[in-house]
Length: 181
Image (cartoon, rainbow, N blue to C red; front, side, top):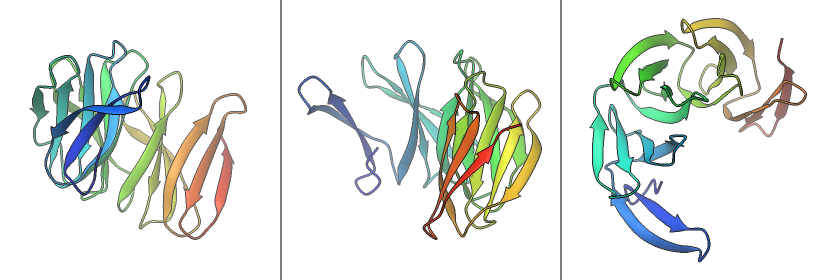
């Protein structure tokens, strides 16, 4: 996604050339692609919507009204659900892909930004930028299982499945590693 030009570039990785540019609106951010590589789902942070781009026709459809400031998006391993951080409302939502409706919502902290999902799809790990925390959310019922403090302004996160560790990068210059229980 191209934050400043309000669009998404589709790039051919064999030739490293842009084959299509898709307009999306103000400040598109996170992208998740379905397991069949048919659709890309894009969190459009300057809205309350998630864009749905058909990767064969490049037509754009929308999942409207998911919440304030969608920033990051991940999908479960089977592609049944999308999870979206809402930077503006301090929440994470669960979207049923088939019905394109929000089926769960939880508050995690102030300005949730990036997140990752465990390989089994049972847990989300969310950094809360202005709360200086990271939260673990159970996906089945969207309940916060644990919240721990981080350095100032956590911004990046990844789940490392071999050692079952959560890595968090903070704007304060720290990289923190948490063991997942």
